[in-house]
Amino acid sequence: MSDSTVRVKDVAQVRNARTNQLTGLGIILGLQGTGDSKATIFTNKAFVNMLERLGLPNMGNVTVKNVAAVMVTANLPPFVKPGQTIDVNVASMGDAKSIENGVLVKKNVPTVGRVPNGALVEKEVNVTMLDENGNLFIDLLNPDYTTASELADKINKSLLGNAKAMDPASVRVFVTNTYRENLVDLVARIENINLSPRNNAAKIVLDERTGTILIGQNVKISPVAVSHGGLTVKIEKQNDISQPNALSQGQTTGVTNTKITAIEEKGVTKLFDGGTTIGELVKSLNVLGVSTKDLITIIQTIKAAGALNAQLEII
Image (cartoon, rainbow, N blue to C red):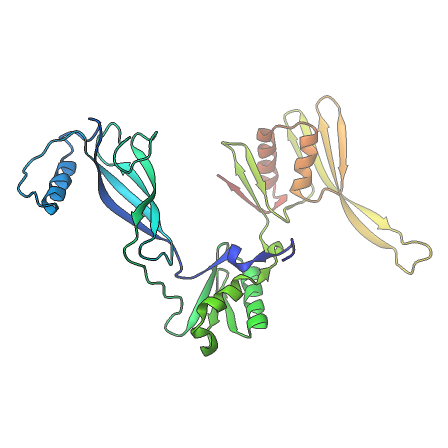
């Protein structure tokens, strides 16, 4: 696989082969007087019910300070078999001061905790990959018309299959009798098909809280001028002539280059040629020592002016 491609298994998944969320009520025992108080009625009720199942019926109201009711949650991945273990999370439901040092609870987490291998799988969740018509669906993690079309085309060429892009998020593959008895091999072949990541939509993600800027591929900017504080940024296009070598048979053509000019209040001007993307702009401003906060503001202003040719997401 070349650096310019990605595998299907990294950007898509088989429909129905998904993780299931499990939720339940549990009881933490062995606390050192930090459990739920008698005011937490459901804890006492759950504890009495547990005692009845253990052969101690008719216990009435029981008040103990070393017991706490917790919500137990876990993610059950597809194809996990009976006898295998999964991690669980527990969180106090009552007024317990701490569930630290209780049975199966990790330390240093007063009222919540994660228990590695804390649950034993007793029953496998059946995964049906084919629908009633014998179709297998591949769902893209990031829906995109171009990627879906490319995936369907490559499945048809490499596997001689009947694949069709249904929408930007899914590709339907009709599974022939040859593969119905060997779906694992079919899915493995599809997962190792290489796609072109250049089809991804241009996008910028800004996190104002942490000052993080994430710039995707193909994020381009149009001519614009931005003044922020003591800094002025101008992005403009200029037409040049490309003159071929005298001994060549090439033709004189016109080309358009982009020029980025950054002027500080002190009168210092720095010129950067060839910056057609927001990435080049950010590099240019970093040279001048512009802060991340100011960078975020400048990018937002360029977007508001309609000069940012990309999606802008602020989190």
